[in-house]
Image: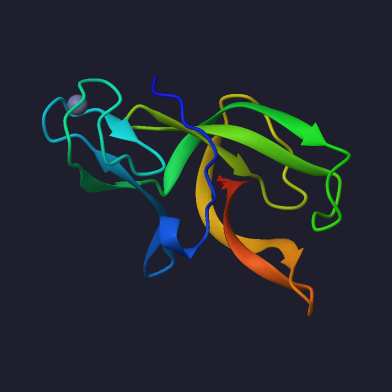
Length: 134
Ligand SMILES: [Zn+2]
């Protein structure tokens, strides 16, 4: 399982196809390793250059935590989870408000309001995960 770090799921990091939301990472053309966020140099084999790779829209919840204290931009409490994708990539994502996390549950990516940013305090739109309704 490739670990990722410091992912910010803003407009540079996602793609839309109809109502489906994907995170855009990268794949190494040499060894097929997948990464999120995109990596210009493969962390597995050192190959320079990568191809875009869409992750999602579905995945599973590896583990989670509920955050009760954060900076002023974030409404607390909120849930952060590690979401596993079929390409062997694990990404830290916020879960949508009201989601009741359960390890192993099916998740799907959606766009939802994120932290309130800037002078006008408009919520940024960020990629979140929500439980798949069955
Ligand atoms: Zn590689």
